[in-house]
Length: 90
Image (cartoon, rainbow, N blue to C red):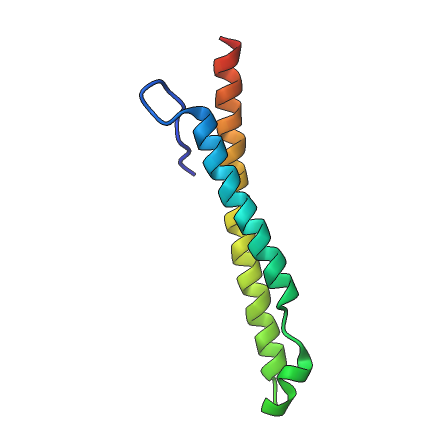
């Protein structure tokens, strides 16, 4: 994963942290909304067959993709924080 480098000619470390933390916050809010909108079997049984099972599988897959993006953003935040802390120690 390519992470931004905190340096004098670039975006400030604090701005990079703030921006990425905001993204992570919105992803967490989105995940909460997704959990509340989980498929309910009674909304699918009229379709017969495996409709609910397939809807649930697709839902879980969507949630996992969002979780993966959140994990990447959290990793970026961690790397930026390490750079900011290293610059403070200088």
